[in-house]
Length: 341
Image 1 (tube, rainbow, N blue to C red):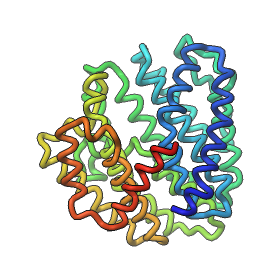
Image 2: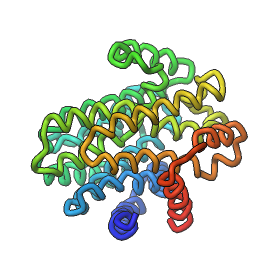
Image 3: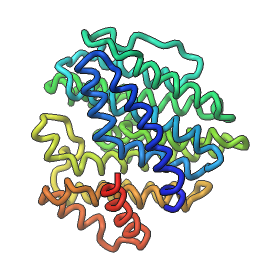
């Protein structure tokens, strides 16, 4: 936590200030509004993601810049899809090509707004992509993780397309997508697989791994299998858990709503947490990954949204029951970070 307060949070703040100045220069009113909303209301995504830079402090400048830029692309595109009048899958696919380009340092830029009338962002999205590419070029072992990162980003993009199309078509599209992947994840339900694909944490951990000159293929394989689907699944299930009321009002799809009752919700989120702990315990720096898992539970279950939802509050109590000292520590720190951000 000392390193986070001393190095990570100031670094994130500096990066976001730079991107905010670019947001103010976006000519198109709608694009500027969504970029402003995403970078303001979702800055804690960047703060949380950049914690991974603690694992390699000498490379923190590159890692923080990369993670903040990549997460900002994700949040901006999510806003464009969530709050858009469009339900065109080609539009969503075109927008998310930016994420695929961002993790390929050799990729040319594309016209990401090709299927929508709002296009003039003064190169904001393109600049985010180029910054990611420039940072990736400084990671000495990126070649060893590129295939896995592209795989995770591709799954993320698929999810964003399927979940934002017409509400009557979403579930069918997601179930058909699940049929393609279900054999590889027999212990998951379809909504849990979909949730796991919505996390960027696996990508961030692989960015960190790529910053290590002595990275091995065995370590890459271990990170991939530990983070996807378990750490990633836990991350997004917790996110959806606290957003249930908000999503119900907004008519947005919520993967936790597919559980039949509170007991099943608790059981499955607890299962994801247990598997995440077990699998990350086999990785190098196991204590760091344990910190991430306990931090996720504390961060989401301490969110102000929890207290306004009776059932979520009950689930939170169940999940926090018999909490470890470290989780309680991160709970307090989560509250403090929110108040000081």
